[in-house]
Image (cartoon, rainbow, N blue to C red; front, side, top):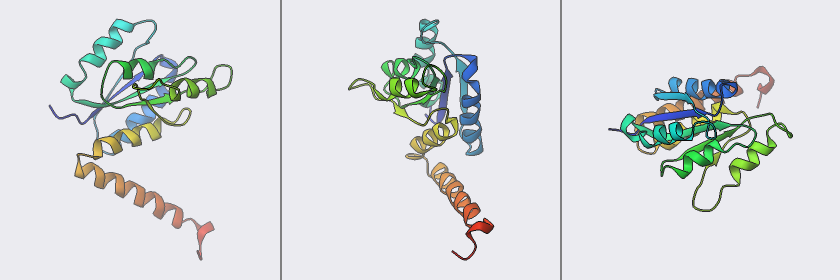
Length: 162
Protein backbone atom coordinates (compact mmCIF):
# COMPACT_ATOMS: atom_id res chain seq x y z
CA UNK A 1 0.00 0.00 0.00
CA UNK A 2 1.26 3.49 -0.82
CA UNK A 3 2.34 5.53 2.22
CA UNK A 4 0.61 8.76 1.32
CA UNK A 5 -1.61 9.32 4.35
CA UNK A 6 -0.89 11.20 7.56
CA UNK A 7 -1.71 9.87 11.01
CA UNK A 8 -2.62 12.67 13.40
CA UNK A 9 -2.80 11.94 17.12
CA UNK A 10 -3.53 14.16 20.09
CA UNK A 11 -3.04 13.27 23.72
CA UNK A 12 -6.40 14.74 24.70
CA UNK A 13 -9.54 16.25 23.23
CA UNK A 14 -8.40 19.71 24.34
CA UNK A 15 -5.78 19.66 21.55
CA UNK A 16 -8.18 18.74 18.75
CA UNK A 17 -8.27 22.27 17.25
CA UNK A 18 -4.61 21.96 16.21
CA UNK A 19 -5.35 18.54 14.70
CA UNK A 20 -8.25 20.01 12.74
CA UNK A 21 -5.98 22.75 11.33
CA UNK A 22 -3.44 20.15 10.22
CA UNK A 23 -6.15 17.99 8.67
CA UNK A 24 -7.67 20.99 6.86
CA UNK A 25 -4.33 21.85 5.21
CA UNK A 26 -3.80 18.23 4.23
CA UNK A 27 -7.31 18.03 2.81
CA UNK A 28 -6.72 21.23 0.81
CA UNK A 29 -3.62 19.60 -0.68
CA UNK A 30 -5.39 16.32 -1.45
CA UNK A 31 -3.65 14.30 1.28
CA UNK A 32 -5.73 11.85 3.28
CA UNK A 33 -5.39 11.81 7.04
CA UNK A 34 -6.86 10.12 10.06
CA UNK A 35 -7.11 11.64 13.52
CA UNK A 36 -7.15 9.83 16.85
CA UNK A 37 -7.16 10.95 20.49
CA UNK A 38 -4.86 8.57 22.36
CA UNK A 39 -2.99 9.44 25.53
CA UNK A 40 0.58 8.13 25.68
CA UNK A 41 0.21 7.85 29.45
CA UNK A 42 -3.36 6.66 29.91
CA UNK A 43 -3.64 4.30 26.90
CA UNK A 44 -0.10 3.21 25.95
CA UNK A 45 -1.17 -0.16 24.53
CA UNK A 46 -3.79 1.44 22.29
CA UNK A 47 -1.21 3.96 21.05
CA UNK A 48 1.32 1.20 20.35
CA UNK A 49 -1.28 -0.78 18.41
CA UNK A 50 -2.31 2.28 16.35
CA UNK A 51 1.32 3.10 15.48
CA UNK A 52 2.19 -0.53 14.71
CA UNK A 53 -0.68 -0.88 12.23
CA UNK A 54 -0.03 2.47 10.52
CA UNK A 55 1.72 1.15 7.43
CA UNK A 56 -1.22 -1.22 6.82
CA UNK A 57 -3.40 1.89 6.56
CA UNK A 58 -0.96 3.76 4.28
CA UNK A 59 0.39 6.13 6.93
CA UNK A 60 3.71 7.65 5.83
CA UNK A 61 4.05 10.49 8.36
CA UNK A 62 2.75 11.11 11.87
CA UNK A 63 1.74 14.38 13.50
CA UNK A 64 1.64 14.10 17.30
CA UNK A 65 0.10 16.98 19.24
CA UNK A 66 0.63 17.38 22.97
CA UNK A 67 1.01 19.91 25.74
CA UNK A 68 2.36 19.90 29.29
CA UNK A 69 4.84 16.99 29.53
CA UNK A 70 4.42 16.51 25.76
CA UNK A 71 5.61 12.91 25.71
CA UNK A 72 3.28 11.82 22.91
CA UNK A 73 5.52 12.76 19.92
CA UNK A 74 8.52 11.02 21.46
CA UNK A 75 6.55 7.91 22.35
CA UNK A 76 5.24 7.69 18.78
CA UNK A 77 8.78 8.20 17.41
CA UNK A 78 10.10 5.46 19.70
CA UNK A 79 7.74 2.98 18.04
CA UNK A 80 8.28 3.73 14.34
CA UNK A 81 10.93 4.59 11.78
CA UNK A 82 8.44 6.85 9.98
CA UNK A 83 8.79 10.64 10.35
CA UNK A 84 7.08 12.19 13.36
CA UNK A 85 6.19 15.88 13.62
CA UNK A 86 5.55 17.20 17.12
CA UNK A 87 3.19 20.08 17.81
CA UNK A 88 3.68 21.54 21.29
CA UNK A 89 0.53 23.06 22.72
CA UNK A 90 0.09 26.16 24.87
CA UNK A 91 -0.65 25.76 28.55
CA UNK A 92 1.28 24.59 31.54
CA UNK A 93 3.63 26.71 33.58
CA UNK A 94 5.17 28.55 30.66
CA UNK A 95 2.33 28.63 28.12
CA UNK A 96 3.79 25.98 25.83
CA UNK A 97 7.52 26.56 26.27
CA UNK A 98 7.72 23.47 28.49
CA UNK A 99 5.98 21.38 25.80
CA UNK A 100 8.23 22.83 23.09
CA UNK A 101 11.38 21.98 25.03
CA UNK A 102 10.11 18.48 25.84
CA UNK A 103 9.60 17.76 22.15
CA UNK A 104 12.80 19.28 20.76
CA UNK A 105 15.02 17.68 23.41
CA UNK A 106 14.61 14.13 22.14
CA UNK A 107 17.54 11.79 22.77
CA UNK A 108 19.91 10.90 19.95
CA UNK A 109 18.51 8.24 17.68
CA UNK A 110 14.83 9.13 18.19
CA UNK A 111 14.24 12.32 16.18
CA UNK A 112 11.03 14.33 16.20
CA UNK A 113 10.59 17.32 13.89
CA UNK A 114 8.92 20.19 15.72
CA UNK A 115 6.80 23.16 14.63
CA UNK A 116 5.76 26.21 16.64
CA UNK A 117 3.52 26.10 19.66
CA UNK A 118 -0.04 25.31 18.60
CA UNK A 119 0.84 25.47 14.90
CA UNK A 120 -1.18 22.61 13.43
CA UNK A 121 -1.21 24.31 10.03
CA UNK A 122 2.58 24.18 9.73
CA UNK A 123 2.55 20.56 10.89
CA UNK A 124 0.19 19.73 8.04
CA UNK A 125 2.38 21.59 5.56
CA UNK A 126 5.54 19.85 6.81
CA UNK A 127 3.86 16.43 6.61
CA UNK A 128 2.77 17.20 3.03
CA UNK A 129 6.30 18.34 2.16
CA UNK A 130 7.72 15.06 3.44
CA UNK A 131 5.23 13.08 1.36
CA UNK A 132 5.94 15.32 -1.66
CA UNK A 133 9.48 13.93 -1.87
CA UNK A 134 7.97 10.97 -3.73
CA UNK A 135 4.79 12.58 -5.12
CA UNK A 136 5.22 15.04 -7.99
CA UNK A 137 1.56 16.07 -7.99
CA UNK A 138 1.67 16.94 -4.30
CA UNK A 139 4.91 18.84 -4.81
CA UNK A 140 3.20 20.90 -7.53
CA UNK A 141 0.18 21.59 -5.28
CA UNK A 142 2.51 22.76 -2.50
CA UNK A 143 4.37 25.04 -4.93
CA UNK A 144 1.06 26.48 -6.17
CA UNK A 145 -0.05 27.13 -2.59
CA UNK A 146 3.18 29.03 -1.90
CA UNK A 147 2.85 31.00 -5.15
CA UNK A 148 -0.73 31.95 -4.21
CA UNK A 149 0.46 33.01 -0.77
CA UNK A 150 3.16 35.25 -2.29
CA UNK A 151 0.72 36.70 -4.84
CA UNK A 152 -1.74 37.54 -2.07
CA UNK A 153 0.96 39.44 -0.17
CA UNK A 154 2.11 41.24 -3.33
CA UNK A 155 -1.50 42.24 -4.11
CA UNK A 156 -1.92 43.93 -0.72
CA UNK A 157 -2.40 47.66 -1.30
CA UNK A 158 0.22 48.33 1.38
CA UNK A 159 2.82 46.84 -0.99
CA UNK A 160 1.86 48.96 -3.99
CA UNK A 161 4.87 50.34 -5.85
CA UNK A 162 7.37 47.79 -4.52
